[in-house]
Image (cartoon, rainbow, N blue to C red):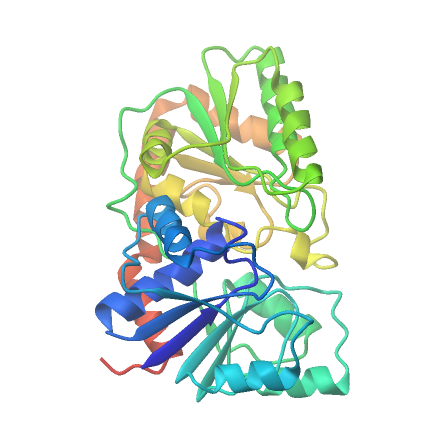
Length: 367
């Protein structure tokens, strides 16, 4: 099977969406012997596809040796016919939509919806484009529900991302609260600024011998850089560490040593009015749970799909709530141990095996 995988973000970002797409690429190329091409947009600044793919391979711990990079006619400089003709050469073509759509010509057109944009208005031509994608996939049940509501279209599959439990194991635990996520403004900003302020209040109220560690790259652009700098300034003078660059090995060590995992994406947002501004799933939470960290995460978007409040972690609604629930874990070792074990069990529901089984269904592969 000849498969094309295209995301407008490939070559620009290294987040959860890119890992999702490349985990599909790994499975299809290694386990199903498909010819897989990773498509770069016409305006992408990457020239050496092999180097870029190897960078992703190292970042995510994937086997991408069989993947080939290719530039596609995805730019305003190209016509709808160019895109249709380009995709006709594939048996299956998966498009990781950023809200835009086009007429695809492969035998099996697969539309992956990562962000449930509520602001899209569909013209007749947009409806026809959407109809040309026979298979529609969402990254979470939250995204599926919001897309079916706002877009008025059917979503066929929910495809959670994969977390390999062998990659994220508990280690020697320290008094450490962790958050992993890119620094950027706009859309579903990870709100590291909120996490810093919450931790500072805990310290000011008497929390001792605990650290907050924020791990994540800074997205390109002045706005993202300024946001990261503002977070850093706010953290000054408190036991807060910010790691902008880290290897996969170092990231695993942070997960292994963390007792608690925080998440605040969507803070202050009405998820029914602006579903695109909350976390649509949040696999970093699952990675932390696999390593035995207990999640204390915002009760919005896909986070409430992952965490059952009071069972394998805590969901919170406001700042008072997060501080209260965090302190319960800080002061009650027995509770922390119980929830840590339950968190590890829950993380197994996001295994690579289950991810691969769903990938086969989506691509109509009988194996």
